[in-house]
Structures are given as structure tokens and as C-alpha cells.
Length: 248
Ligand SMILES: Nc1ncnc2c1ncn2[C@@H]1O[C@H](COP(=O)(O)OP(=O)(O)O)[C@@H](O)[C@H]1O
Ligand SMILES: [Mg+2]
Image (cartoon, rainbow, N blue to C red; front, side, top):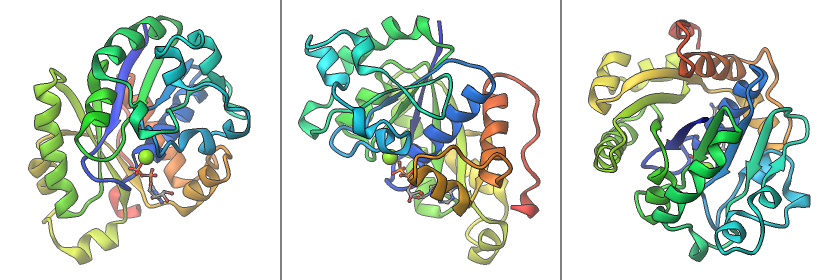
């Protein structure tokens, strides 16, 4: 059965969806079958980032309401072999209740190597729904103090949900900016404040953001794509070092 991972954070706009797509593509490039579930009801974005927007008919709420079989709401992503998307409902009111997620996702997981669930912003119903079926969490944070404090709050909430296996993904990292801001003495100080073990540092990478905005695969040699490839390997237990921070 595929590992079920929620990608979450307290704040919006820190890069949960970018990380979900970047990681999903990197895992698919490693030859894995990956199901990405968009948990952001009302503000869904993954269908657009993965180029299935035009053919979208059914979404996860049609499955849970019994209007279609799960397979009808799972779309292969063109240009991303091995990657499949289950889109979020178009309306916030159709957020899937946590207990329904807890029943549905384990039924899908045996058909994939990985199930990734992209969480919405905030710590309300959408967050609880996205986390409900997960065995582990990636908490995405930017290297600024408010965001790091939110990560610590999210860590506690995930623990309350029984998710002990958590890893921190620092996104949009730029060494020179981090030093100039001077809010943390070093990366270790930031990691300590979040209370979550680090798994990846993803650099600020406009090439990657531009590619996803146009539903293109990330340029393979871009710093962001390479960082997601490292994250994918580390998530699968390989001993791969982080990128040298001073070069980010
Ligand atoms: N590593 C990155 N480098 C450059 N831009 C990024 C990076 N991560 C995210 N972004 C940009 O930040 C914005 C918010 O990212 P998104 O993934 O939608 O955040 P969230 O899902 O947490 O709300 C988007 O415009 C995205 O392109
Ligand atoms: Mg998002």
C-alpha cells in the first residue's frame, strides 16, 4: 500500500501546492505511481498546474457523494507519466469531512506507491480533512519568523491528530536574504523553533514557479527541481545530502 503523506502549513502562500507538485513529479520521475489529491476545496489549483483543468468533469466530492466511481475522478497528468490527480471540489462547502477521507484514501492507496494530499491554508476543517488519512506530514515553511511559529502550531495540531512522523520543508530559501533578515542565527535555530526535523531546503526558483504556472514539468536542471529530487529520495529513505546552502 502506498505511503499517505499530507503536505501542510499554517500560512497560505508558502508553497504547499508547489511542493506537492514538485515532489509528486520527482517521485514519478523515480518510476513511482503517484496519486496527488487536491485538498483545497474552493481554491483548487493542482488541476491547472498539472494541465488537466480542461478535461475536469468529476472531483473527489462526486466520489464521496456516490455520483461516480473513484477512477472517473482520477486524471492522468499529461507530460507527467506515473502521476495522477484527484481534483478538489470547486466549492468550499463541499470540503470532504475527515471521517470520509479516513475511509476513502486507504481504499485508493493500494493502487499507488505514494498518495500525497495537498492541504489548504489555515487550521480549520480543510486542514483536518487533508490530514485525516495521512500517516505522515511534510510541514512547509518559509524562513521567516511568523511562518516558523505557525509551523510549530501545526506540529502540535498534527500530533493531536496522531501524526507523529513529521518533517520540515523550508521553501523559497535564499542564503543572502536569510542572512540579511538576521531573524535566526542559522538554519539550526530556525529548525529548533519549529520543533520539526528537517528533510529539505527548496530554493527560491522562478524557473520552477513559471513552469508550474504553465503546467510544464519543472526544468530538470533547475535548482528547485533538483531540490525536489533530493526530497523524493530522502522521503524514500535514501541517504542523500541537502544542497549546499550557501549556493542557494
Ligand atoms: N520555491 C519557490 N520559488 C519561487 N516561487 C515559489 C516557490 N514556491 C512557491 N512559489 C510561488 O509562491 C506562490 C504561492 O505558492 P503555492 O505553492 O501556491 O502556495 P500554497 O499552496 O502554500 O498557498 C506561487 O506563486 C508560487 O509560484
Ligand atoms: Mg495551495
